[in-house]
Image (cartoon, rainbow, N blue to C red; front, side, top):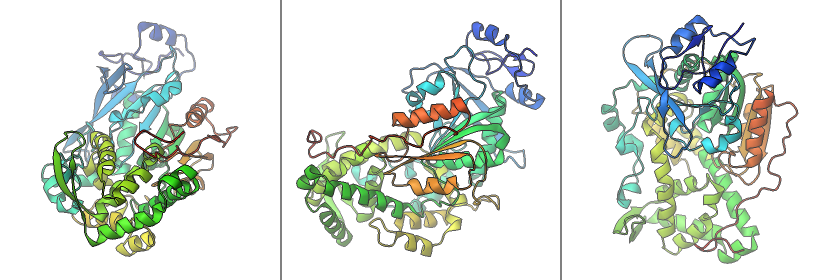
Length: 510
C-alpha cells in the first residue's frame, strides 16, 4: 500500500491519500511520503473528522518557530451531543525531519486552568521536534478554548492593595459565573480528554505520545485510561496521581519543601552567616502577622508610585508557597524573609509580582474551580484539611478556601471510578523534582505502583517540573525513540544541587 501521513497543508484543504492526511510541509515531504509502505490507515470516521480541521500558519508569542493553528468544534455537552458548541484551539509545531515519525508529542498543561498554547515550553523540546510534531491543545475552559476567565479571580490586579487583598474565591464566584456563557459542570478532566481524542482523530494521528506537567499528568492518566490504544508512550513530570486531592496535601508538601530550604540554608556556611536563626525569625514574623497584619508603604516596583497596602499572614504564606516552585526563585527566599523580618517588604513584593504575570497570562482561574470542585473538593472534608495541615506553617486555609468556594459552584458528575488508581502497561516515564512543594517524589511513587511498564526518576536540586535539567530532556527523548522505558538509567542529574542562596541583590557570594 502507498500512503502519505500527517497534517493538512498550511492554509489549504487537507490532501487525503488512502484516508490519511498529508504532512503540512513542502511538496518535497509529500513526494517523500509516497515512497513509504506499510503505513497505518485511519478509519473513515477519522478521515471525515479530519476534514473539519483547517490548519493555517500562525505565530505564538515568544516562539520563533513556524507553527500551524486551527480550531475544532465540539459539543459542550458531549453526552447529549446537542446545544452549545465550543471551539478548541489547536497549535501544531511541525517536525523538522522530511519524514517525521507518525506519532506526535501532545503536551498537557498544568493548573488546572493553564492554556497549553500560551506556555513557553517549546525550546525544551528541540531534540524531540527533530523527528516529531508537537501538538498543543487549549483544554476546554482555558486559553482560546471558551475560557472561564474572570478579572475578579485574576491575581494580577493593578494596585498593590488589590493584588495582596485577603479575599477568598467564594466572595466573587457568583459574580464571575454571571459572565460565562457556559455550563461549568461540563469542564472536567474526563470530558476534556474525550475532546483531546477528537483532536487526535481530526489531525489524522493513529497514536500519540503524551507529555503532562503537574495537573497535566492527571489529564494524561485519565486519557490513558479512557483511550489506552491511542497512547504509544507517556511522560509524567510532577506527578499528580488519582489519590492526590487538590489542594488537600499542599500544606504538608509545601512545608516539606520549605523545611528543606531552611535546612539547606542552616547547613550552608555563607547562608547561615548572612541569615542567622532564619527559622526562628520567620516564625516570629508569622506570629506578628497573626496578631496584626502589616501596614506597608512602598513604591510599586513597576510604576515607582508610592502605595499603601495591608498584608495578612494568610496572603504572605500563600505567596511564599508559590516562591518554592522554582529553586532559582527560592534561592532568594532567605534574603526576602530576612528583609521582611526587618519590615522591609520590597523583595517580597518584587518576587510576588514577578510570578503573577506568568500565572495571569496562561491560566483561567474559573477552569481551576471547574476541575477541583468536581474532582477534588467532594472527596475530602474540613476535618481532613485540618489533619493534613497539622504542624505546618501554611495551615489548612488553602484546602478550606477551596471547599468554601466550591460550595458556591454547581455540582458536576464524575465517573464513579474516577478516583481509582490508573492501571496501565503503557510505557511511562515518571519525573519528580527533589524539592517540589506540590507534587514531591512520593506522589510519583504512588502512580508508579499501578503502571506496570514505568520508570520513576527523581532529579536532585529541582522543584516543580524537571524539564530544565538536560538529563530529564535526554530521558524524554530516549523514551520516545525506544517506545519503552526498558534499558533507561534511573540516574539523572547526579551533579545537580540546589542553586546557591542570594546573600544580596547582586547574587550569591562566589
